[in-house]
Length: 311
Image (tube, rainbow, N blue to C red; front, side, top):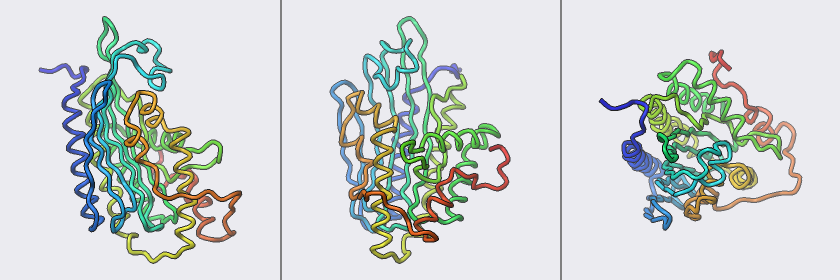
């Protein structure tokens, strides 16, 4: 019988590889034109990964689904700042991270990540935790899409506790918030980090449930919106709003900071950035427009599930 408190890194590794493969297969079928290009790489300090990137597809302008398993002798500053007792400990981190940027402004950008971290202090047991989640960034919003996204997230969390969705939904709203803009990046979803209840099997189960539910959350939305007619006005607004995505990833995102500080592969770390983006000085949407409705109705951190009374 295995000790449920001890981590099984190899089991996590195998799940993440399967998850990357299954998501890429579904997204290729959804795109209908382009295929993911696979780029395997090694990290000189230890470990490596598989980057899979799709560009100029029928639906997706750019997207990437990355797997990595990297390790080192000393924790990087972004990971050890609130755990000083682990500063000199050997560590390893693994995860699948993805971002999909569509052509059509009516199809939202999506991001998902599931990850596992373990460090082994001298003369101590391994210290480990899971993290992950997914969030949605629309340019032109639809209530039914937001409800579906959050219903799927809630269903993924339900087997692990009645309050898990509400806590991690709130965390997502707080994490993906651009403080300098005083606005959310998108309509949220789930975000969790440092997750360790002491039972590895249960915590691994939560990570798997979240990771495996991403495609069920995103695919129906893409299918509903991918053939919506759009004009240069919508495209211009999409490029402008993509700027918010770039600002968050380069200023606040923990994964980006960790990857760069730990000597990660820059091409894979910055894969999440969109291919085209614009910044306009002091741009303000026309009152009453769909562009204004994005921030007034959708990007508010609201509860999209009316029967969710745990917020």
